[in-house]
Amino acid sequence: MNPHSNGKSIFIVSGEESGDLHGAALMRRLKQMIPGLYFSGMGGTRMKNEGLFGLDSREVSVVGVVEVLGKLVKILSSMRALKSELKTDHFDAVVLIDFPDFNLRLAREAKRLGIPVIYYISPQVWAWRKGRLGKIAAVVDKMLVVFPFEVSLYRQVGVDVEYVGHPLADIVNCDLTRDEARAAMSIAPDELAVALLPGSRTGEVKRLLGSMLKAASIISKRSKKTVRFLLPAAHSIEDRLLKKYLGSAGVRVDVVRGGMYAALRASEAAIVASGTATLETALIGTPQVIVYRMSPVSYAIAKSLVKLPHAGLPNIVAERAVVPELIQADATPERMADEVLSMMEGKKRDEILEGYEEIRKNLGRGGATERVAKAVYDTITNLHFLDYNTTPDMVRRT
Image (cartoon, rainbow, N blue to C red; front, side):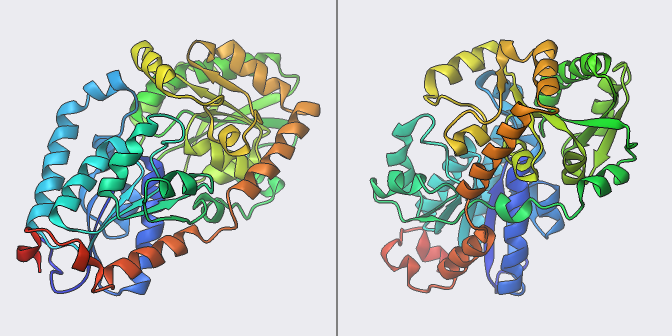
């Protein structure tokens, strides 16, 4: 039960590492705006540290149709628990962050109960399953999008939509110079550094880290200088999983906890699993190759549904191929090594860094978290919000 039932409370749900990052920043700002604000729902370590009561999102974080089956029991039990809490506790608003296949089901339940639904970071309807727009319009009261081109999609179906900019424009920052970052990582002046980012989900690490380490071995052998490898590990990845792979890597790999941006700043190049980390790498300014693998069945399904020329977020944001992408069968150690070695210096490196400037401009002027917090604040302090949205269930709630 909500221990602060006499005050304001928000039901907030994220399901992935990036959502946990943005959710924690939002919670931090909302607590400043509304002292005593209570949060319940689901999130990761960062959201828990900001005071979230509820489920751990690491239990349900997965990508791919086949991959979901391995966690289906936990996903379904988590859904039941969250729906039950929505029914039994009083919440002033529901804030859902990305994670669409899960969160849109919660949105439907919240809508039925008459609770205002705010969706932050839109499902990628512009990439696949555009037919979901109508269903989203039926269950979401306020859509907060991070890309400007998403606004027209939602306006067409009558959704109250607001472009807030991308939160990474505020979050991604490294105060260290390259030399300072290299010193912090104990990289000698005559050494090179390459960052390895295998993802924030256990399944991603299992599919990619082995190949990344083989690529590291190739890079080390082919480089004229000594190469150090840095692995900025996500909070959600346990040390024992990393040790399973690093023990037989054949190259020195330093695991970095809590210093991702410094590790990227210190590196000449990076191998990065497709996802939010690719945008973070672009904003720090480290040339990268984007890699990804999923099960053959999941990939076949995704390929038939996704209608975009690019898979990596930096290329999607820039609307052109700024950095190389190695997806599925192309994500071999040899190809990864070739791409990294080609971007360590020279024309290709300069072209990538030039493209990063476009990406920074396209991600907005900053202030996304502040605008999202204001939208949530306006919703839960607007006493008239529910006048036109009351359902029979609201008799109990009011």
